Length: 269
Image 1 (cartoon, one colour):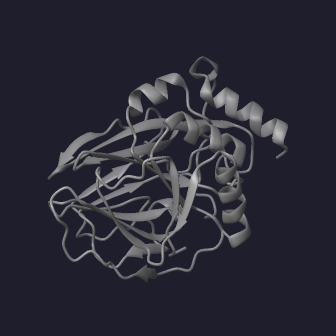
Image 2 (cartoon, one colour):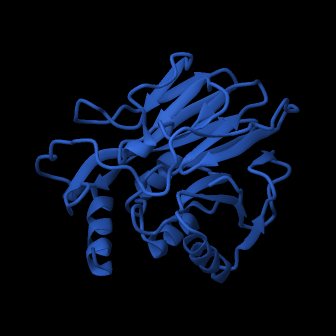
């Protein structure tokens, strides 16, 4: 798909009034590249102080988020990369099989799918799980293998705990409208796909990040060092700081947020 086509699709997907017509029947597409089935990473957060939130990059689009009260959440939970502990909550998205599971661990108490598997309007989640409020903002995706739009095919999940608002962009395919931004509200930390091809192109993603104005941005969903570095170069060009961490886990708090927008790279992909 050329850049002009991608920009046109992005604009169309961003304008709700343009979303008309039947949605193609969905069949499970191939997953995104670069995954090894069954991969797990150790979890390093044994305990957290009040006001601290643990974030571990498991791989691909999966993070383990741990609240001060002990709630564990796995984002875009799938059959390929999983945390080594069973989470309390699993969120999922539909764009590729590497972002959801039809056979989640039976020990997971709460599963939140970011789309409606039966078709039609996606669920609108707003649930309190322990000391975490979890909600979603629905976006659209393009049909795998074509330019067609699937409405309500992706969810940006927002996790609110310890006075932090963490947003996972999922498999975002288009820029955000003012209404999306209104629904999202203040975002402190954004978990952002940076591949620039399967999801939104890099220029579009930079526009999304600028509109969110989060203090901390953590890349995910990249398939090579060169792809990641391309994003980091763009981020540095925006005047954002870039930091590389030695471990896949980081402890965050509102007090420890960087004073200026910062990209933090966690190993683990």
